[in-house]
Length: 235
Image 1 (tube, helix red, strand yellow):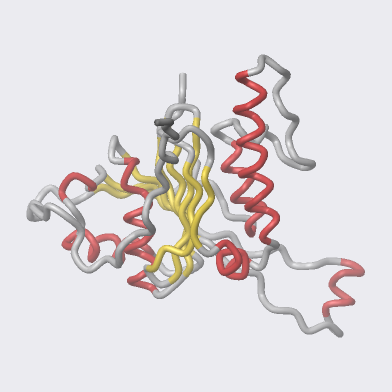
Image 2 (cartoon, helix red, strand yellow):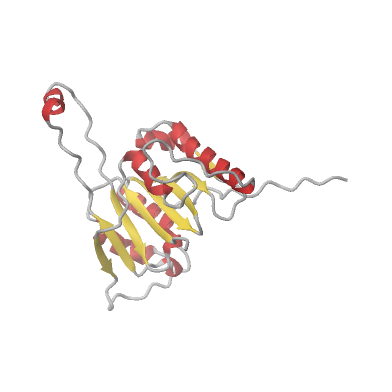
């Protein structure tokens, strides 16, 4: 059975519960999940032995800290919008994942503005669009990382159509790139972004006033969704 879920991670160690409660007033009614599961950010491991000695004489930037959040209920499709809203609210970098029917999409935001995204679901082939160079710089990775996953997903679809063997995982990855759970490997490669398998859950208060917004309030427009190329015709 295919996995259906939506989650996002923000580069911040701020408590997201009050942030999400504030954003509730701006959310669209149809994008309101039952609640959220929030995985507390993990502090980077402290160097030991020789590495600790070297660290005394080396100036290094602290490793970014990410807080990941799972949407609870059937509104998993709204993960990109909640990621965008939190990114705007905190002025931080965020990435969202939408996993549906054996495929996985992602979208990257910076202070609420969508920078780049990869879409697979409902398209004939994977499409990576937006400013990939800027997205790579936000995470301190090479643009080839994004291209490799796009190319691998494309190759997997071609090989599946031809009945060939499934592609092998990238070195160090647990899943083949076209597997829906490969998004967890991708998140780790971006900066040890934790998948919120466990965490603190909270649900909306029963006395909270209903939300009747037909659309989100105050969010910047998203990147145009890629469409299928026009069908060539002959006269």
